[in-house]
Amino acid sequence: MSLLSHRDRCQYLAESNLFKLQATRQDLQSCVDGSWEEHTQTVEDLLRYQLSQHRLVRVSSAADKNFVLAFTLQRIQFILEKILFQLALKAADGKFHRTKSLLMELTSNVI
Image 1: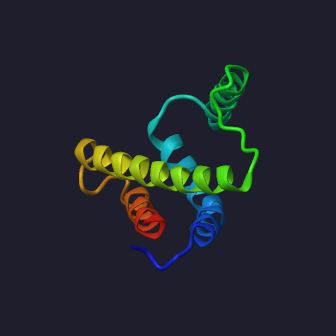
Image 2 (image 1 turned 30 degrees about the vertical axis):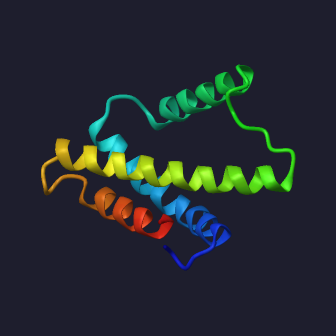
Image 3 (image 1 turned 90 degrees about the vertical axis):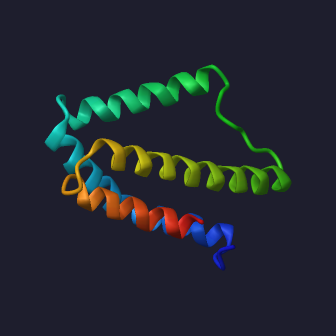
């Protein structure tokens, strides 16, 4: 069990997000066709669709907030572990080294 509280973990995720976003952008641009703008537009379209279909959680009480926070952290950890596993399977040892190390660091700090 981690000594970090849910809020501390969220704060860590928020603070490290910009650096990881920049690293991800560089890695994505180096190996994928298409522009970063196309990628961000696709993500924004997905979020708009999820909101229109009422598939995103809307929080109304403090108990709901705590539940959503705990659930979200568990899902983030699960997704990070899956991404890291798939990246390790698909990419050679020398490829995406920075991304792999950032994912490992982020995964260990979310736990």
